[in-house]
Length: 288
Image (cartoon, rainbow, N blue to C red):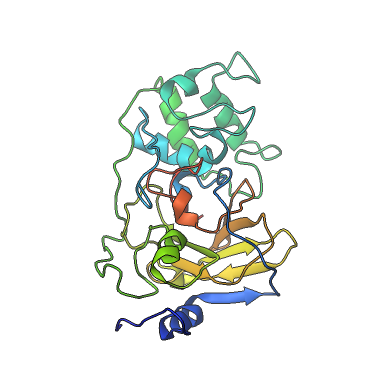
């Protein structure tokens, strides 16, 4: 795509991006973009570096399969900065510690029981339940005596990277903080923008989950009005339309949903959902 100037006129670039990715539901209210607030529940691996790659890194002494389960199902509330009144479940010591709810059991044992409790599941609704394989992985680790590991090495699941620099494209710079960048270089004034990934700690510029296969990001404003955004081939989604704050968000795919626990005031999703996660986000935005 040729480079097209964006300042002072309606750009062909923006028209293409809007037509390519946005399906809108209802009407919209005016809102402002603030700072990242709260954690994305059940996003775990999210969702789970800096303007895309800086921020605090969550390093664990857990085996990769255990980190993956906890990241996907627990760290939205039980991450490095857990929700008020909840324990962090980010390392071997915290998982072996006696549970506050039952001192005869460890936090890991209580977590396993909750994952299998239909009446009081963990993560709580509307987040998706842990899968049979995830429960089996965590159960096997507990049965083995909580062996330590070295966490998960970052991977680029798509095995393709964006190499076009700041050349204008709907698929440009996946994983980067879109609104922060656009606010300084004359790009489209997005209210919401981010990238959806299949795993939690994918690097900047790695192409994300191909959203053309049916994934949808649903953003609901404080007044109930909604945006329904379809990520593109690079996993990028964006919208200029504004909603009343704070908003709620979820990713829906193949009949499953991954819902953020905390309401948000910033639409610059990748500013918090970095490779390592900042402001209590546990990592990239994840497919459910």
